Image (cartoon, rainbow, N blue to C red):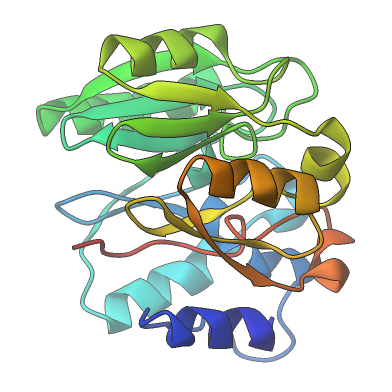
Length: 236
């Protein structure tokens, strides 16, 4: 985790840690699930997994300390995790329902985004896929990388309709075991990815994507990757 923080800082990214009182619950490091950032502020997630209940309060405290407006918290029987929502452009969001985001939670998030004038494209996830984040990543204004067989059909169609080229990740084993697709975009065609995925890295580089790598072998054992560990607050 410290190496990941250092990799961001070396790339010129400002990093804020979530530091709860006492011993943190182990899944708290996957902060991407706990909020979804908009141009007006943050939408707080509500994890579907009971072992993660209440984690969002620690992220809420940190966001408030940073001066980030908190727009809403998913409530009632709703479940929503930020890794199921993806900005396509300034006016379009892909929102997936499935294992971690249910229709009630998705409806609450959709309503708020629509009030902002955002077009929300509802996409379903294949059975067994945890989050949209693990199946689809945008690396430039017109380029996305997807996991064949897992990425929602409607998501790919929505991207192509908006002028995106969608490339399919080349190696199933690296995507699954090495979190090769779980990348964070640092800039246009520039990403931070997990080290140890030579086939996928060569594929990215052939597409003119600059790859920065960091070892996350221990973090992968918790079934998450770089994108899962990163809540993006601001992109210029």
